[in-house]
Length: 206
Image (cartoon, rainbow, N blue to C red; front, top):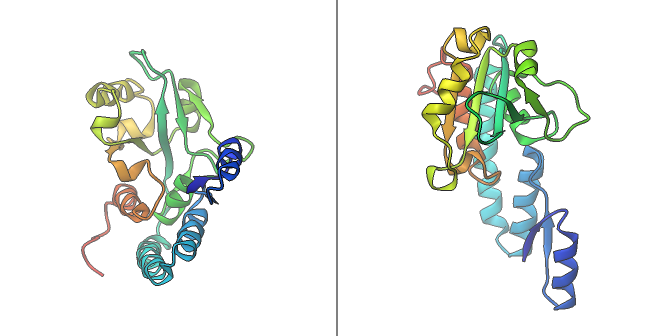
């Protein structure tokens, strides 16, 4: 059985039942790639894992080559909202130690949150105003897996009219299952983020 690192109690219980386990991490982009290696090795699918890793690296290299010399706008990635609020009260954002931060960098942006002591930082309205992101990307799973009204979410962001991202119509909502599942389809999110951060690039040309 494959488990995420940190599920120590469940792992111990499974070991008592003589069920073999493999613990992997998906916190960062490197962790995701290493997990694919480990799973491929443990399941006897090394060749499949290598092909998948090669495709992921090809996508990363392509986007990195396109964006590396460009100006890096300040990006806020929201990964969770406080509920039952008519305004943006507080949001969970991408920190410096997760795969979203890795994707921001590769896609040619810079994370507005630069501190490293919190794994999942929470931003208040005041913090959003202080950091003044140029681009806001709000992440949601596919529609069946959340109960938020995305039109209402968009309106809530627009209330923060003094933020650069709002003023320049750079608040973007991504609603997709691959956007919240750090796994083999991670480069789908990477490409989407790159298109948002650098729309001036013709992404259809090699």
